[in-house]
Image (cartoon, rainbow, N blue to C red; front, side):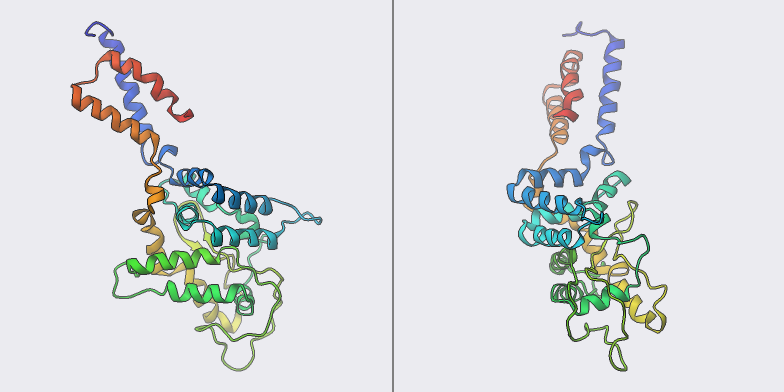
Length: 307
């Protein structure tokens, strides 16, 4: 074994091995938790079927050439209502350490159809807020979100551990909300319009309160709307938007999701990590890795991304 490799070749092999270990850093695809979550969903028949359904609907086209938002959002609600939360939440809240992972997370539910539009200009937040207030689907979900994600000032991150899981469930419940046809109803608590009936707004059919990640550089979320033209209801509009953009409980729950990963995801180990662990065990048990052993392991290391 001592004469298996020349010192120069052994040094090169060691450098290659160090490079491989460097590429397995948390910023690489091997540690991309969103990829791991997607693989876990694919391995589960029900999760895969529900995911395939909403992707097909959200990527579809209507006769007019637009996206079938009502069908897309309905399929999304089915995904989160009938899929295992351990799998669906892992897709929605997977922690990211780089823009590639974060962009994959932002694109989880085909936001071009389910989140934004129609058109490139965001509506006033008063539009989805008022539409949600009169929706049998949206209103109870938004009420549940308000109650479950209300920040607790006495807790450092604003969200006790037992409340965090309820907050994330309520947030997921908003994904795919659809106003449908308006109906009479009471105002949402905290958004009561004082001084008579709400002013008439042109509420487009299908307006949704579906939040999403705002970029691929953070875990900040917001609905598809703004408060730039809300007139004398500016304060009311900002209060609604800040349920998502300045909610310490929601922020803390999303940031801490990885530490509360359900057993089904904790058991979905990364094969690259397993290989590293095995190499370390061999090294510690049998002394330093020899040149011949390194030579025999290099093809395995090189093929790992393809396995």
